[in-house]
Amino acid sequence: TFSVFQATEDEYAIIFPNGQDMEKIEDLIERLGDDEAGRFLAPLWERPILKRDAMGIHGTLFFDNERTQRIIPPSKREIDWEDSSINQAQRNLFSRYR
Image (cartoon, rainbow, N blue to C red; front, side, top):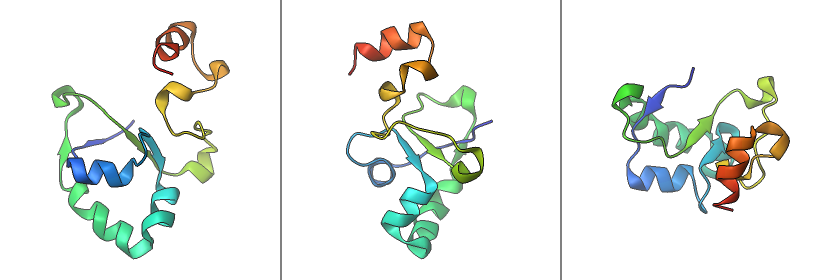
């Protein structure tokens, strides 16, 4: 399952730059550096929220990608999943936002 944490607008902009809504932890660490990423994320982990209380999920930070071999779109935007990875209803929805 995915855990949900509340990020400030500034934190969100750092985690998900350039309009993306997906990020891999290894890419965030590469951008910020290992120590800075740890300091940056520490306050975020102190703000968990229940899924039922979430007003919206605006981005996903993926962990353990090397083990799971998850392939996310190069753009790191949900609407850019390969058609073979999503169902027809998702294709229809995403095509309106591309």
